[in-house]
Image 1 (tube, rainbow, N blue to C red):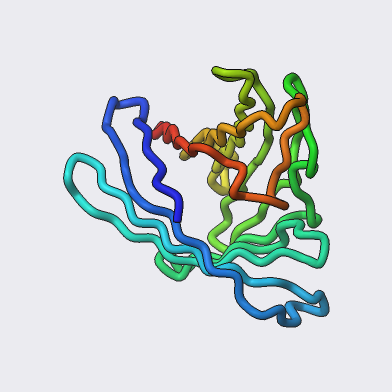
Image 2: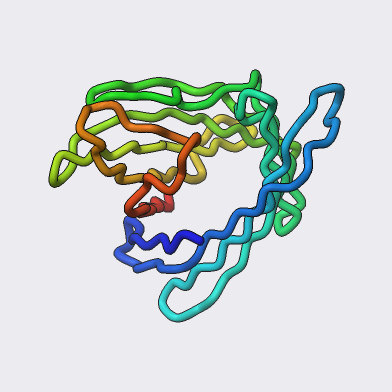
Amino acid sequence: MTQPSGDDSDAIAYAGTLTTTKNKSEMLEGVLATPRELDIFYTDGGIGHRIQGTSYTDENNFLIRVVIPTYDLVCDTAFPDSVPSFVKIGDIGTLSTMTCDNNTTVERSWRVEGSDNANAKIIHNVTIKDQFNAITNAADVTHTVASDGGLLAPLDKKPQKYDSVSYTHLTL
């Protein structure tokens, strides 16, 4: 379980928990996929919210689909992809756009910045656009990764390496 915290552009503080459970692989539209159940609970100003869903990755651990029943939403990537397993400070990248069944798109990118004590921050940016291509939501998710004696930071393969996670949510 991860305990994210952060604030938004209106200075509303958020805190909560993120729990993931890896399930048995299954076929998803002809691809062997691994579902991971997601349970996100957070508070904003004392009001609790829960979002539950499932992310699906292929045999390379690349994201292919996200299903969020809370919002009756299914989003698919244009092609399976992920942040590379090893990155260094200064690296940046763009991930494939996700198309959702509610006519929204999710643009995704990532970058790596230096942090305190020779740690690295991997920052995922997500921008959600409506059917008219207007931005409706944007968020940065920052993972602080502890140094193991070098600038290379393992991602996704060993999530226990993450020493903290913070979320900054911007409401437009």
